[in-house]
Length: 258
Image (tube, rainbow, N blue to C red):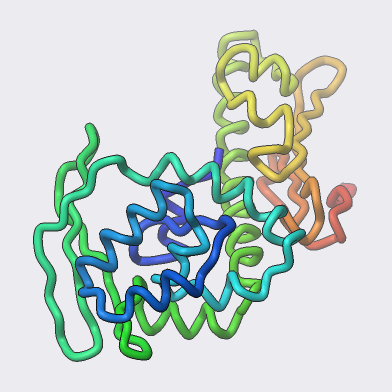
């Protein structure tokens, strides 16, 4: 249920960046003189081959990867492997523009939904072109190895908000079809009104619950991070008054009593 487009916007102006294993030094030393277009071609080729470490040597995200321990790699790996499918099989470079230490390569992604050229930004660093821009390079350098973890938290928090809104709409539809009564989570999943992912935490990073009253006339929903600090920090609660959230160490959010 990870939103690949949203991840792409958070992590890079040049589509999706992934994690993985491999040697960085060899690629970096062999690509000193690559043109912007050749850099982008290599970047995509390495992505498709899942040689993610080598690909990061061609991007602004190397400072976020190099300091990670093997355990931290393992923790992040699943998130980024889910995004591997977003890397298109066919990309065509239609041109490039170079202005000093900045370049733009125009990549035409060929798929059923889109067939138009999109700009990929590069910057010249230490004599090599790398994918990314100056602004994001500074952000990544400042965050270091926390960059990807922070991005994951932001994405999961946004996704929880979106899923709670989807639950609310599903409850409205269900009540209209069942004489004003509301449903629990398994019932809404069975009816195809909310994703089955919500029954577990693997893809969402959160544990969702829906509680209905004995007569089925009222309901509330809650969500807490499966791993506090890794998959999320905020706990959420939603009822007729709306959505509340707060950092309570991964515990259920306290509900104010009327």
